[in-house]
Amino acid sequence: MRWHLAMPAILFVAMLNSAQAEDPLDISVSLILEGIYYQRLSEGNEEPAGFGHDHGHGHGHHHGHDHGLDEGFNLGHSELAVEARMGDWLEGALMLGFDDKNVEVEEAYLRTLSLPAGLQLKGGKFLSDIGYINSHHNHDWDFVDRPLFSEFLFGHHGLQDVGVQLSFVPATPWYTRLGVEAFQGDEDEGIARFDDGIPVDRESGPRLFTAFAKTGPDLGADHALQLGASAGFLRDHGRLEDHGAHGHAVVGDGWFAGVDAVYRHYAGRSYGHGDWRVGGEYFLVSRNVDEYLQGHGGWTRRGNYTERQDGLYLQAVYGFLPRWEAGLRAEALGLTNRVVDFHPTRLESLDASYRSAAQVTFRPVEPLFLRAQIHYDDFAHHGHDHGHDHDHQGHGGSGSGLGFLFQINVALGAHGAHRF
Image 1 (cartoon, rainbow, N blue to C red):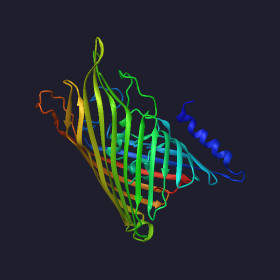
Image 2: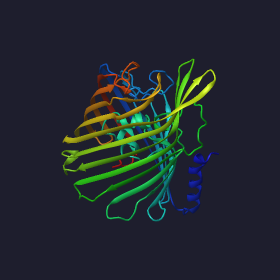
Image 3: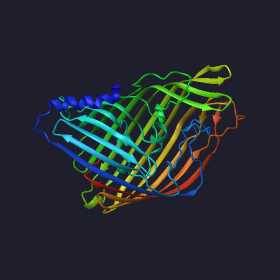
Image 4: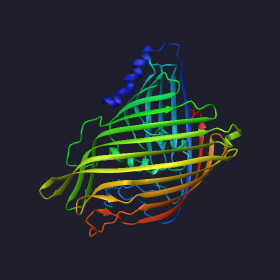
């Protein structure tokens, strides 16, 4: 059995043998159901320039900005969660995500509860604790959709993989949490992408390593602030473009770094009236890649390039009435946007893409919310006019589009407290 699959079982057996016989096993089950109505009000570019990397050549990694939603009614992203706790020793969770077409294991992990000196160990498949939004499930978001930087830099589910995490909460006057993670690096999109047919053997796992720090100074009962910083290193990244008679590939390693901040103000009135919160994140990804060309004689290595891309968002949400809130979000993707392009092969600098969104949310009861959202996309287009200037500036224009989403989300059964 591979080590990353055996880790949760080994950890469970070790803690089980140490636990006292009278420790009860507390199990809870919850079901989160979501429905989304989506309507595209005007057409625009479906993919931000530089972030598909296949540029229409169809090897299965296309991201549409509507996240695969059909126009009209969609089941959305629903979850079935089983959580169990063995006294003060150990807890585990299994979370299955599903829509009307697919079912997948989103998280399946074990986590210790009683290691000394503020240490905690977690193993299995789980969402990384880098940044802020990455570790939050869909029903915890303030908007219907995932921020662009998370979707296109890390993948449709964010950074989610099989691995282990060691975290440390020191004894300080304010909240501080430090952590490191090692992941298999086996996802098929985002920073950990590695296409089939790459002319270089893949490194053995683990291939992805991260570190994060979070701190929250004590600002009193009416205020809360969390600041974070994250970084990571990837041993393997590979993209392939198949043109039939020939092919192109880029293969290498990479790193990323980011910062995040969230501030909350509690007005002390009923049902969130007068509460407000603001937050944002910025991440930069860098990849050092070799470029290969496939011809009749096989693959030939031709050059080395450093790709860099980034993304950010800022958002604010205000409770304007009891149980009612409204929010605004502004995003930018590819303010730095340098990627390898082919025909001819070069490092191309592409335009940035932008998106803005506004939402209104109503929570008639705590487990249920209804949300209406409108978003405006201004995605840069990757033009293939190879006669443009020799500075390799890929300014292919932009295409704006407008979309409307209506979401209903309900949590049934026992459900844990929401994260900060």
